[in-house]
Image (tube, rainbow, N blue to C red):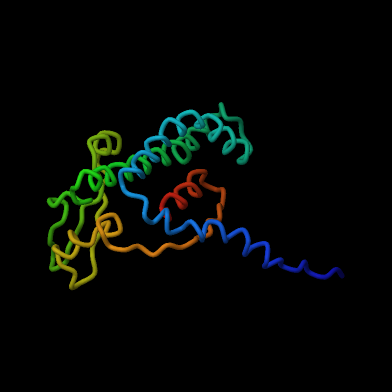
Length: 184
C-alpha cells in the first residue's frame, strides 16, 4: 500500500500570494473601469461561443451539431453574456451617479421590503417575457436601508479585499466564469 501524497502547502501559499497582494487594487477599481472591462468581454464571449458549445457537447458525449447542443448554447455563452449584461446595467447606473436600483423597484409588501430585480432591462422583458424575480429582505429592513445599502462598495462603503477559490464542477459550462464574476 502506497502512502498518500504529501500536500505541498508552500506552493499553495505562493500561488495565493500574488492575488492576495493585488486584491486591494481590484477592490479600489472604480465602476467606470469595471464597465470598460465587462464591455470588452461581450465580443469575446461571442467569438468563443462555438468553442464553448463544442467543448460542452464533447464532454457530454455528443457532437456540437447535435440537437442536444441547443442546451449548451443556453448554459454556456448565452448565460455568461446575460450575466455580463446584468452587471453592466447596474455598474453603468452607478458610474453615472445613479443608485444601482430603480427606486420604483423597491417597495413594501406584507410588512416586508421587496425588490423587483428581474426583469431589469427591455431585453430581459423581451427575451424572457413572463419571468420575474424578487428579493424579499429580512423583517425589520426598511426601504431606505435597501436604497442606501445596495451596491455599497461601489458607492463609498469600504470593501474587504480578499481571495476566493473557484472550483468548476463542469456540468453547466457557464457556472465557473459566473462564479468568478460574482466574486469579482
